Length: 510
Image (cartoon, rainbow, N blue to C red; front, side, top):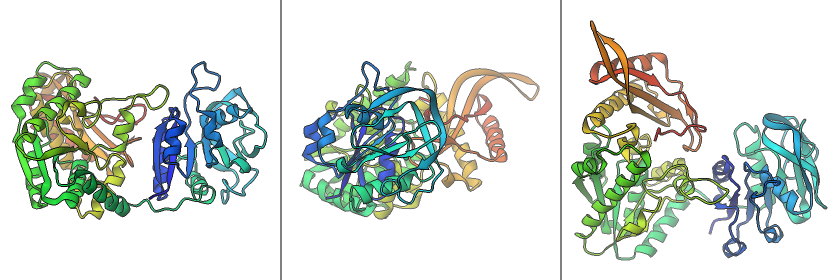
């Protein structure tokens, strides 16, 4: 059994980053809503608890809070930003609205470097994001650091095993943030770093074998990293009782259907190929709302599976490549991480199926999935593929979907990927793709005026897709891509490049 750090989410945009940073240290971390019950926490007690930041003020009428008994479980606690303020507030300290809000970089002036801040240089950079600050500490607490605008930038109560920071150690802008988290996780909480890709794979295989027994599992293969790793884990667990179904929705990338079939058969997977293009296009006819597109595709995908499952005697389980960010983003709880969009693998679809779910990756972030895949011996050409959404090209076409638009987008996307591969930068980019904009713009081709649609290029760098920056692709690569798309894709006379970050934008356009 691995040591676990529980992260209680108060709605911070950085909550997932806290969990990621802890996992990078080799310790399993799990995110739960701030209102998780005391009994649920006691049931599988964590080695320590972290309270995330959040957008609220403790003075707000409906500000999120916790059961005060959590503070008396004799478990080490780290409160970050709002997590610090709610801790201080509950224990009898005083919080005030600051005259000067503090957003952005700040210098940390260390007062006590004996535990949480051990080894952290004085005047190191930290990232602040708050409007309130601590005016008076609860009994037994002392200040261990300050900044220019925060006389109390970090505090502790050793007897209660409580530590708090007004700044965010989880973000990269906090220069020694990882070292601060390491001090808390190992020196204060006493965790062991046993959470590894190898240990996860071994544990998952045993758990799947115990859960599934001699039943058969149907696994949906999309051709992406997630479904591939999920399939191989399950294959290791139950061997010939895994049936992989590849549904060609007509919304895949250039030559993807052929490549998927060849790749997975070469890996020894039992693969069933279903051509369902006409079904999906018929269902999507006239639909332009992105949420409806996702729901329609998800439901039709399940319908196809139900039909195929009825032909396989003893099939009781459906495997999906659901990831941890999908789970978190698709859970809507008052206060913490709000639903951003529905996901193909989650969002209420399973109850419509006649099969039980197996989701071996639902505890993992994307980079962890690739690491597990490497442990399982999956080829690099599969593991290093850029992420591709479950609904496919449908959510990369703004507005209604038609086969002509899909074909144009598919070719444009192929050209873009081809050019960044030729430039040797494919592996440096987290995700690159084209978006079809049915917006008519004026152009000139030869001596004729044109009035045609637009293709947007999107390429981002990221660690795990939770935050992302736009890729600084060389101008000559963008130029070659633009020229080729306009010359080779009929109906397109303009190419633009998306330079938005996540947040505030998302990576996908829909």
